[in-house]
Length: 245
Image 1 (spheres, helix red, strand yellow):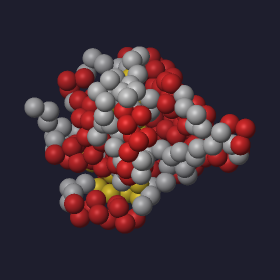
Image 2 (tube, helix red, strand yellow):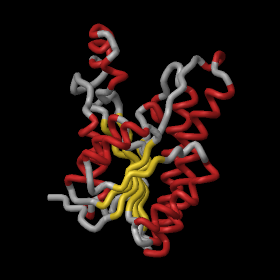
Image 3 (cartoon, one colour):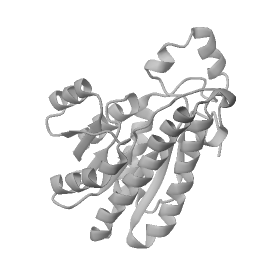
Image 4 (tube, helix red, strand yellow):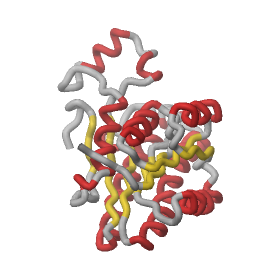
């Protein structure tokens, strides 16, 4: 049984489908959690649902505030940050020749640059304790590409390469950095897809079904726990056999 008691964890993007499941499962496992997001209503609901969780409204696209945000989180945790889970991200899809500069920049700035900066300032905190873990939520698209998602695919592929580099740089300081790469996961977005299209998509998945947010969250829980202490620089795929690395 995994028990995360006394572990201090930051979860970004905690109001989305996958983020909500990560929050739910890590709370059940007794972690001390700071949950972040930008949706005030959803953050308020988190406060009501999870009274032990510390909720902080924060927009990671505000790069100049990331260092202060990490300082504030560290202070909340009395200087001991154990785990950062980078789950926040956006899409802004378009075919390449139609993609506007702001569509490209928005996705890269949030999904890649902000993730890098969060990692950077978290690692600075973790170095003081010579221990820590970072889990970056990427996407199958970062491995396979996808029509209309050149920006998103580039951002997620970048996070994977960055994570491997950080794992090499800070493994000797006992800081482990890994990625979790979801495939097609049930969400509000997939619920809007017609049944015919869903069936076509499922035919490309060995298990012939979409995954659930809990499928991703369970892998995250494993990576946060001591069961994963000899794993770093890896990407764990949660895609039902849609893609094999």
